[in-house]
View 1 (cartoon, rainbow, N blue to C red):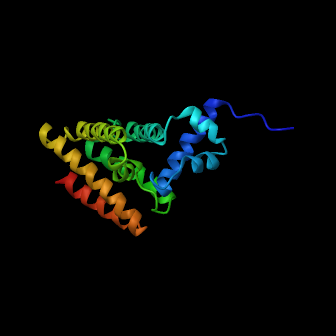
View 2 (tube, rainbow, N blue to C red):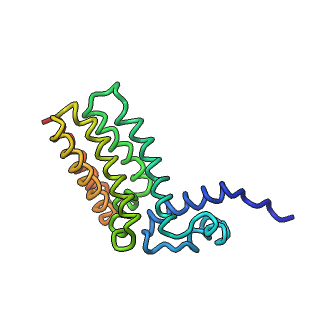
View 3 (tube, rainbow, N blue to C red):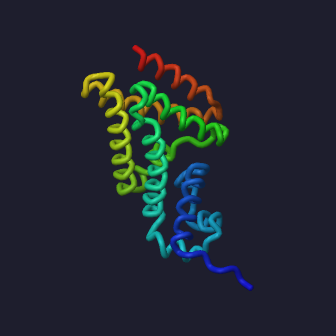
Length: 192
């Protein structure tokens, strides 16, 4: 007896979760839709039924990934039972645990996609710009308790850019050293 077919919504969810994992491991450009479908154990036709293109698929994968980051932000940045500096440190510590689980070889999908997307897609580039804007706003909201509004906005943007650069370097070095350096610098910055 053949196994029951996977419901469409489950297939879509499998494709998105698998795509996020493979984009993380191999990158957007190096990942094919056939590869994602095969890794998800979903027929290629199901992929094309759910997504009109690899570009549209990447947008959904990005949305899925950002949803997971929002959960971390709610648990850390939005936790007003802690002072602002501690909330920001807690965010990066939570992310650090996930990085360690992947042996420092998988960073953040946002800068990973950003390094590949502009040459391929205005749609994806615009989505990434919007994500970065929302993340910057979330950090700035916490930093406004430590600095003037205009300083908090600039500091949030620089902090996020430094973090993304840290993650790229971590992946290259396959080491926790860049993350440790970032955290030491962050503590000095937030305490000064």
